[in-house]
Amino acid sequence: MRAKRWLCGALDIKDEEGMKMASGARNQQTGRAGEHYVAAELNRRGAYAVTFAGNMPRIDIMASNTERTRTVTIQVKTCRSLGWQTSIDEGRKCDPIQDETRFWIFVRLGPDNKPPEYFIVPDWWIRNNIFEAHRSYLAKHGGTRAINPKAKHHSIKSARIEEWRDRWDLLKVM
Image (cartoon, rainbow, N blue to C red; front, side):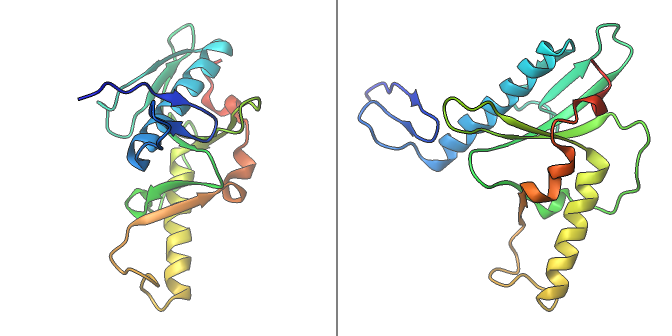
């Protein structure tokens, strides 16, 4: 078996023969890049941050302030195009939490010279939003998904989370 050398461009990940990687490998590479960008940005802003290599369900990063008096957990979702992917299983009816310590950070990776875009969203808010968006979708389609009633896929477009752009202050660890 021949070893492969991976070349990572802004939009293509190819093996040494120039063949595109399978979408699963590309998605995994994109996800890991987003996690590292978030950890680097947190550290750049003065927080401590550590990534986990898939060992912690629903936690990709833990971050704390330098005094270690506040710690937050972060789930990172990364995309290279128009929207982020998740599951309807992540949605549930939630009430606001005043001092939230769980967050989702949505990262959009752009072309080579453009820095990533970040959307810092409280966990309670995004879970409630997924729940409400899916409920609304079902109401418009007679109570079932239009193409595959068993599908759990859920897409999040940036317009839904625009109010959370660059809201690093919510983490309260810098």
